[in-house]
Image (cartoon, rainbow, N blue to C red):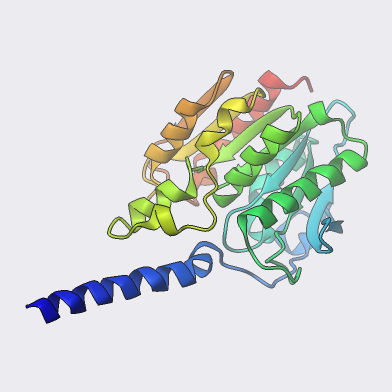
Amino acid sequence: MPAFIGLVFGGYAFLVLLLFVAQRNILYHPSELRPKPADFGVPEMQQVDVPAPDGFNLYSWWRPPQRADKATIVYFHGNAGHIGDRAFKVRAYLDEGYGVMMVSYRYNAGNGGKPSEDGLYEDGRSAYNFVLETGVPRDRIVLYGESLGSGVATKLATENKVAAVVLEAPYSSVTDVAQSHYWYTPARWILLDKFESSDRIATIGAPLLIFHGSADRTIPIRFAEKLFAAAVEPKELKVVLGGGHADLYDFGVARQVLDFLRRHITG
């Protein structure tokens, strides 16, 4: 019996070690594709390289606002795929004349980097600064974070003045989500990239919109509700009944985002 118990504990320890070593491969799913805007239905967007302070050039798409009173949406995508996969989401915002910046993280689009929480924050800062340098004022910048990108948007909003923050399918922290999926491990103790959004969101003073699917199994809605509870007013939570993790735009959420922006940002 002692030998059997030792075997069980040894196997469990090996499993935990394996998860620790492989955790960034589990969290991040790189795509080397450098998609062209015209191939994904947004031909008016330009391909640009956004310089990061540590030497990376981040392949991105950009279109400036079409009027001076229109805001610019800086879009941070989720952990998998590429910016082209999100082109259908920004179509409605482009049609309304908003500026849009879509940045590829350092581990995507052949940018040459490796993923990490700090690295993604640097990528977010680079995209924000690029938009500022085009002449867009801080009070006309909207930070939009999708899934993993919600942590980037939240972090950036604590560091900079912005017009508004929009979070699609967000989490309270990657720690919470990892522990819920790997409940049989000490996931919260071994994570390298924690993205603790609920610990910092109360410092955001800009209007906040969170929308989340009630049937999301990737990031269960309770984590969005925890994040929302930690935020301060003005804030709104839109629950998409029957929505999953990646299909929320099938439920017409673009109209809700546009309504939110019209109510909180002149123009």
